[in-house]
Amino acid sequence: MISPAPDALAACIDTIEASYEFMLAYAAQGRDDEIAGGAGPSIRQVLTDLRGALHNLPRDVTDSLGRAAAKQATQLTDFTTVITEDARLAGVMVGSVLAVPSISSQLIDNLNASVHVRKLLTDVFLVDEILKSFRCQV
Image (cartoon, rainbow, N blue to C red; front, top):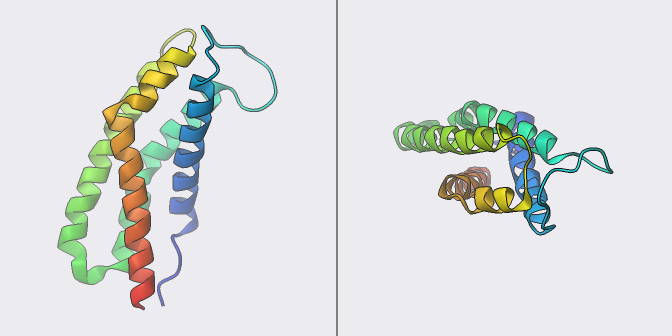
């Protein structure tokens, strides 16, 4: 039987999803600039964690899909190539926001709306469903 997504992939997915939810809440606050200190993580820490998860995602997806679906290796290799590029592009967008001296809500709202971030979220949801499908087949 194929086990659930390995801890590394699950951690990446959790970080990406939690970061996006945090960014939605941050965007809704109407901040003109960052406020340091306060309860909970800062937007910079969330974005830094997100960038790390985006860096690790291609490796973790490749490992998980490779174990789950040896018979479909060619198609899934193509899929992981797409995820790798989408994660790279979303990471560039996140890195660009991290380079700004003060991160406003509007800036995060624009990052949330970025086609690169949205594509990556869709990729994550899709890979999660693909892995669930393989688990159901066994």
